[in-house]
Length: 439
Image (cartoon, helix red, strand yellow):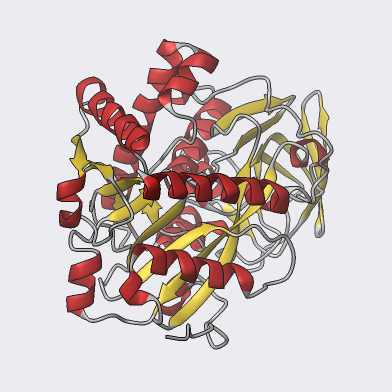
């Protein structure tokens, strides 16, 4: 059958169809404050809530309307995943810190669940669990070892899935094994963000949207910040721009590579179809270099399927068609299904691939989530706020790194090398698939 090209698909996130963001008053930019925050996503708002509730005078700045960037454009999978595996983490940081990083993921997820409940944020959260698929026997063995570590060392309900049992969790022949973990859930990310905007406003944090920060200068007593609506002097500056970092901070920009992550949404599917392809209604991912993440919509009527885009300009159709192709590889019966949405947002990759906090003078940073910002944004925003408050116990984190990530060679903001890297990853994944088909 001929694939339906998504000419009529919306280029705005599926999440925006049933969510609007609070209307914020235009307020004068105050000349001084205790803490200035750049970035109005999960991280900046989490920090603003913590600082304002502690009695600090906080001003938050975002160059566009709050709600338009990655925090409302992601897949809504609250995983708190770490891209390097445990073996690589131990090699880099030693076993104690590696285990601390993985343990903190558990703490961060549980903290987010409590936050949603305590603050009354209605964002369609479900603790659905996650199925991770393996394309090869080696990947299945790796997932088996990881499930054992999660269960025995962290107390997380996790277990390997043999090939014969994959159908309980996902209706595909693509995987030879997998792993289920029960501590990961899904939510409506735009509604989470809208709730955080509401809470930050109620805490008396001053939120300035459509107010770009143009630059900053560290001084002995604080940071002098230039915005498009005037100058501010703050005792501390917290930068939380992640994949949307622009030229206001050239030093940071050389360390964070903005990478497009794209998601497609299918048209509504029948209950019988959903029962076949996603019988457990879980979150999903796999271990390919060009990894894909996918899930049922919160109402269980359609599939949201995402992956890295590989383009750097415009809004071309090719990445959408590529995601359709990969969706059909998983679920052949969906090869001709129509799409209602195809959109992208930017995530921040860097050389260490570990979410982190770090400092330079009176400027603090919380960033580098590598596509897992729902959990880490909320968590590290709060941790960075406690660090600014001088609360050593509350701010303690395995992600508190100094020095900063190293600069990316030959990079000053435009990720010219992304198509090359993605082509290499695609070749790797095709070889893996061919080896699997021959075995």
